[in-house]
Amino acid sequence: MPAIRLLLSRLTEDFLLLALLLMLPLLLWLQPTAVPGIIALVDWHTVTALAGLMLLSRALEDSGYLARFAAWLLPRCHSERLLALLLLLFAALLSAVITNDVALFILLPITLSIGRLTGLPVGRLIIFLALAVNAGSALTPIGNPQNLLLWQASGYSFWQFTLMMAPLALSLLLLILLLSALAFGSRKLSIAVPHNNRADNCRLFGWSLAGYPLFILAMEYQLAPYAALVLLAAYFLLKRSVVSGIDWLLLLVFMLMFIDLSLLAQLPLLQQLAAQLVAMPNGSYLGSALLSQLISNVPAAIFLQHFTDDWRALSWGVSVGGFGLAVGSLANLIALRLAKQPGLWREFHYWSLPVFAGSLALGWLLS
Image (cartoon, rainbow, N blue to C red):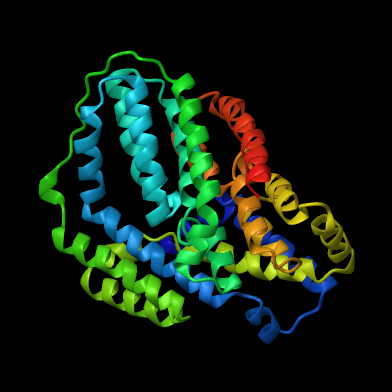
């Protein structure tokens, strides 16, 4: 019973999940579909790939070695500006490897601790962390869920997709780093971030790190479902806390996104609107960036993949769409929710909206 009460509590707190569940009956009434057809709407390769990456990411986090590296790096910073620069670079690099959401879960607690120790404007640093992980995660197919989806749909290899995204991702990161130089001053800092090395698990870190390239190889050959099952069984037997620490409801959110948005894409009125949107000059890029401001970039990618095969424009558009309004990326919402800083939503848009405008222009010039 406690588990059921916890599940019901999570359902009522997760507004996106609740909205997707409430939309489903209406969409099935408008577009009647049998159960086998509903199941077929889910891109199981993408969902299982996300599950495998979540397991590997959680294992790396639980090993303690990422926090150990951060604890080693941060005390070597002697000013607000240098701390922000190094932390943003670390966040961007981490997000390209273990997804933007997981990078935030690792770095936000450390950032909040630094704020308590130094008096640093930690709210602003959290805002820039969210911007940095959105930029860094755009680089690779495994950096964020929308890239993972579009990589699987496009048929590109891992390196083809990365090379396609590199000009935009590196430009976005440079823009954010330049802006951070204005946002943070040169005040001297003296900090020490404690970390209990005795709790670190070297074996868990080594095996999980080695598992990343093997799992990526499995995804390349469309074997993600089998590889994810192997990982699930291995962690369940050897390190059960990794399995229990996964946000499994997030996978349900993505399954419902596939179902709801695929049903939505079958409605004649939406088909006409989407066709007109992508038919505009550079419509796949602009349309996906603007649509992300309304429904977030992952749903925008799921929806618009049905109407265009311009994978570069679509991937660039939803990456840019992660900036601007907070709803543009789930990483933004996670950062603002975990920070619990008064007035942070307003300040977030003070910085994020100009980044969106600059990113939109950069993507247009580079395309």
